[in-house]
Amino acid sequence: MSSVRIVFLGGLGEIGRNCFCLEVDGRIVVVDCGLMFPDADMPGVDLVLPDFTYLRANADRVEGVVLTHGHEDHVGGLAYLLRDVPTPIYGSALSLGFARKRLEEARVLDQTELIPVVDGEIRRIGPVEAEFVPVTHSVPHAFAVAYRTPIGSILHTGDFKLDLTPVDGRRTDLARIGEIGREGVRMLLSDSTNAERPGFTESEASVGPVVRDMLRDHPTKRFIVASFASHLHRVEQIAREAIGAGRRVAFVGRSMMHNVAFARELGLLDVPADRVIDIEETPRYSPGEVCVICTGSQGEPMSALALMAAHEHKHVKVSDDDVVVISAHAIPGNESNVARVIDSLHRAGAEVVHGSASHVHVSGHASREELKFMLDLVQPEWFVPVHGEYRHLVHHQRLAEAVGVPVERVLVCEDGDVVTVDERGADVDRRAVPAGYQYVDGMVGDVDQGVLRDRRSLAEEGFVVVIVTVDAASGEVVRSTEIVTRGWIHAGEAEELLGDARAAVEVSLREAADEGATDFETLRRHARRALGRLINERTKRRPAIIPVVIEV
Image 1 (cartoon, rainbow, N blue to C red):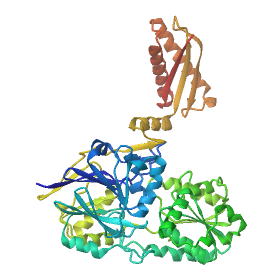
Image 2: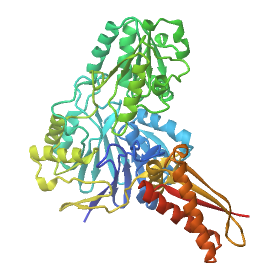
Image 3: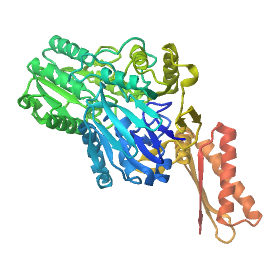
Image 4: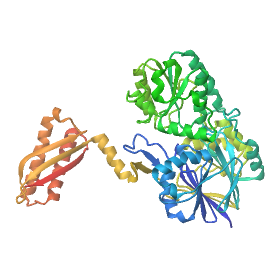
């Protein structure tokens, strides 16, 4: 009996790390390979990836990676996957262009072949036929993909919304999706990000008039607008309105400049070259003649906007001559970074406008009525909500039931689950494959849960180093014990406590010497135990204790 397995490696129960595998006839098609931004309880971590253990173990069965669109939460993990799993990558020219830059930097471009696909194209990838259906999202050229398999069609919407007036005129192809639905969809996997949000998501085109009004209301002030570098429709609207108001436009931030240049090459961004200036040229113009479009909408520490807020940017000094617009909502986990940047901009005297207070941002994801429309249009036999935190998946489940999908045919899954679809139906094997977090800190694989646990402990409790010098023969302490502490107490304010700590360690070491214990490990153990007991009794704290024994 034919069957298809869907293996979820990321993106279910979280925002980011979107990645799943479609297995047909023993071959694997990987759909998206994204990353996630670290939470506050992941100190020192730069990025979070899917766990590629399953794919590494089955690398010889992987036929390729399909990219639904070019956002980092769907493509950002490719460079790390390709280190161990060389394979072709399929996607729009724009998505592949965004990915290429990362792959070149990681020196893994020779591990893949980048294969562009266009709207409506049908590609055979191993045993699967993949049809690429255009959908509207907050990055151009996003796809839903219908996979033709021996047990029927599996339709994955990717990230989408039903924007009837998109900036580039490329709408979600509802007619084709409806045809695929009438042909029969065995299983639908659909974006759940906005499943809690009522109504319909506003059109991206609604942002332009808001920007136009702000430019009109502040004709003498410089505008600094932060947006995602991939949000080219947003960038185009901002640039268009600024140029229409008689301003010059300067693009700032490495990813912004790269993406704008690449999109202009593809003909996806219409910004007249004679109205674009380098950021170094802006001092030649009055504030009311300039609009800066930059990265940093998520408060990233080294982004252009964060450097401006910290007064560390080489060319832009924020003042009361500026209106700063943050044209994005904070991704979960980034709220504190964004708030910190906004505070710093206010301290510099700028007027700050952001998405939570003004209509300078609209979502790229479908809201509840759009999600219901998609379910009703496709009328799948089985449904799996994807892309979202667990509450989003549950709300999407309820929407499916509301439009008539039988409750037993809606499967709420999590990372690590494997769904098997065959002629009889669908079944879920819970936590069947490894799907934990893979942390990136400088280089991939050098941070595990143990390291993170130690970092959290150090951040919360601090550490104490006790240095003792002993006679190599007798084990007796021959020099005053030193204690160095960070994050436990301030040494200058706790001399009495530190004196008691030194005394407790020396008493313990004398007891060890009296018992004839002179080896390093025993002395270290005595010092750690004595100091830990005193710290716990006197401060109710548990800092990391590092004993250092020096023989003379």
